[in-house]
Amino acid sequence: MNIGQLFQQFENTKILVLGDIMVDAYFSGSVTRISPEAPVPIVNLRNKEQRLGGAANVALNLKSLGAEPIICSVKGNDADGNILKELCSKEGLLTHALINDYSRRTTVKTRIIGNNHQLLRVDEEDTEPIEESVEDLVYEAVKSLITEIDVLIFQDYNKGLLTPSLIARVITLCKKGNVPMVVDPKFHNFYEYQGVTLFKPNKKEITEAENIIDKLGLDDIKKVAQVVRKKLNAERIMTTLSEDGVLIDTAHETVHLPAHPRKIVDVSGAGDSVLSVAALCVAAGVSNEITAALSNLAGGIVCEQIGVVPIDRDLLFSEAMELTVSESY
Image (cartoon, rainbow, N blue to C red; front, top):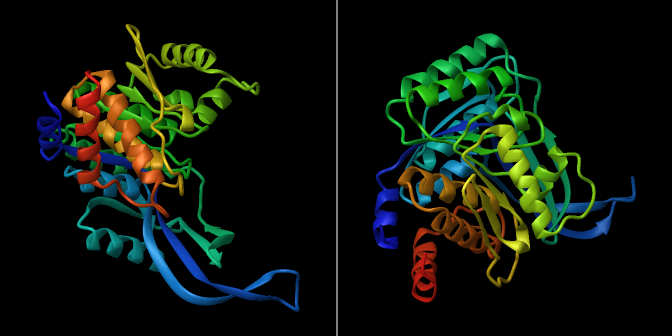
């Protein structure tokens, strides 16, 4: 399969994104003076903006790449929950598996920005595990869609949706239906994702999970990845290493690709783009080398953009074509 065929394959892929969804709000303006009430800057508010965040940003990346994402998550039965659903509709994202949880607030992260610098972030959220009755609703939603999808993504932000029980139930469901699973973990539940297809921690997450505080070189990270893969009984561990690129470890091979030189502007959202491309590559059944190469490119492209933005499909395609001219996979 060449790059052109692979990108065409992306357009025929349906992906269920199971994870914590949120609203990213931005209040921005100028700062010209300090408050007389406390030693803090006064922001003269000029603009308010609300965007999709968390698992919804993964869905936006998948849609940008031509795939058909379905979001499965919970939101509060509140004004912010209505805003979140409206934002999804505006972006053309399918939300029939988005469930109201009457016991919690919709997660909102509000960033206060003055003179183009973030001064403060305010989080509105409930992070306790979802109740058993809500978990059952989420599980039934996944079960109703399992025969339609090509891959399932667990997007875990430790906000309470992905309980150990739900994770285990969905993994069993996916294995029964031969649906590959891709995971973006956080510290909690790290080792709950047993037997998944691709597990994507970053360097910080994988070392924290193994209680390692020492600064590690590439060879050491390779050894840690092997340990984690065996503990998880995972098919593949893909560790993102920031400026050191991407590492994929399997039982049969280890692939490392260094990062391409980039003018880094903002790393926000890069992990979501990497995850989205990796999931599509898993669905397409391509090699670890191609998965690492395309994921690496996607993360770098997004880092050259300001703010959290989905990957530009055409730009990724053109850079991937240039890469295949100089390198053979």
